[in-house]
Image (cartoon, rainbow, N blue to C red; front, side, top):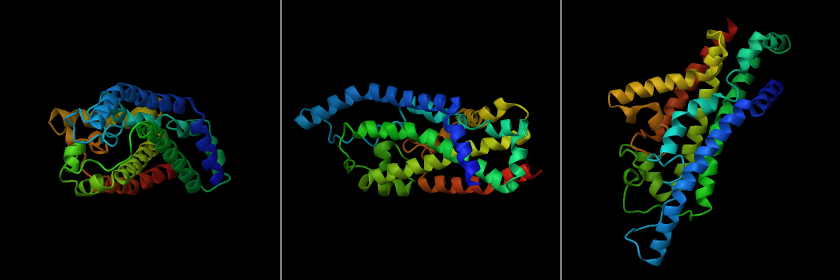
Length: 275
């Protein structure tokens, strides 16, 4: 099983889809940084010199790509997040089925071990592909601004626009903003991996490779469109997986969502693979 996992992971990271996804995410990261940094450095200089009305120069935790919910680059990134996660490996299982490569593997290794190795490789590749540009964004801002506590004059809702109902964020963010940020990155890592792994299910229900690559993105876009049309954007999946923004439902909700998807999607994949 380990050998299958390594081969599939190598296929994902050497694929054209991985290059497209990682370049797309990094372009959004650098674009957002290039737009924000001049004004942010000016504000920082004014605060340090005492010539500004700003109470605090704390701009790191609300400015990196993941938390800057008011930036167009942030909106684009989380909109296409399912596509970025799926691109490196989404069509691999489909190809393996079509070429009978999967049957050859099953002659040597138990079927469930083969499927689990492929599921795990898809999970890791999708999670890494999405998380790397976000880490790059965070590191870019950390190279220019001090890693300090956020301004203590308000709740997390005032700092990043996070819902006041998110008690965990309102406790962690003011006193331990880096812990909150890293924990949020871990949740995005997990959710991105689940997006990638769920795309493997389509290999058993569709005869078209394009469906495997685009279905998670199309479904997420359709749900987002419906929610926005009825004024429920803040309850949409795209909104609440972000570390910042009025749509952030909370860390506990994200954890529960991940557990629910793990409990439901993995057994469905195994059942389809056994048929």
